[in-house]
Image (cartoon, rainbow, N blue to C red; front, side, top):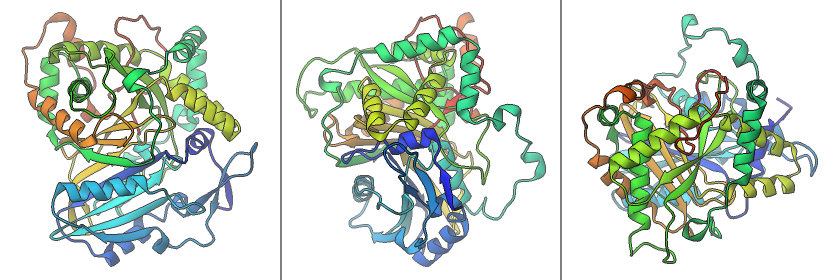
Length: 478
């Protein structure tokens, strides 16, 4: 690599940075025992920096030029790897370390990533932070899986790597254009709806951000139990997780002791939801980058029974699966990526102020992995809340369990730990219900989170949306 132009969508994510809010992803691998710094350094050297992108820095070519990737002539793994000892025991000390990492910006002029070994008694953890212009959640997960002992040095068998389809050979913007041209009226209607959505107001309006971030996470929840509960309600796992998140937001925001100015809350809080638009799962060694669209989803936070909340979300997610919104949003990102940075910031601010948060869902590996001979007991990540947004919620499955990560700017009117605890309470209240007949059987048989193809996004319930052919079915991304 000498110089490689950054894709338009990746450039859009690069230009979303503000001094008080950078668009970066944080991931954490918790191990069952200590891992030496020398061992981690060797693993990263052999399994991570072999990706050209992790040795390349971003060079901005000027106000009207596209940014490019350029090999860092001074690259040294030592500049990207650090270690620290956990001060104190337990969850709170680790939360503090992750929060500090989420707050501290990446070093300018270097490849936009870093890793940290966290040592604490009989356990250890590896924390990785990278800028969203490098990769989305799906691509990042592929890279992290490549660090595992199970994947390292093991080439995929020929039958496991089918030749790319015609759709896969096209970049996502071209595939999106082809899909949208199949029904241009639906695409125009989608763009009009997005542009005319009202801005979030009141307590849930995007706040003046401080740049200080706090993080937390839920306990791991058995995926099989959540699937059973969701199916009993005629819904999918994603619907059930959304219902739990909505109920948790309602609990925390309606708590009289919650931070922020008192005042009435709307019936819904609008979230931006990334939707994976790859033509297939990312292969090991495939190019990184961002290949997802964004859709708006209204989460019901009015006082409702769990069944009512689940039914509302089931209708909204079903509607968006048939809509072109994600492809339209990808086109908007591509167009903004071509614009001068100042104009791109105006565009992203315009759309981000129509929401209050980001919610993303990434399906991880079904089996437990190992790193440097240590079992990876827990895999977590925290999505950025770019531009004007102050709250990000990340759902990740791993080894048959689902964990929810919460990250918020201190200006946002809730504490991440309180929201994570409320999510635990909502998930604990989910229980199998008698399956409803007839009209719900198809929903109960819908593709699931465990199948890696569940669509995760929403639109107003009951809205008639024309079908846009865009295969394969969209999947959640970061």
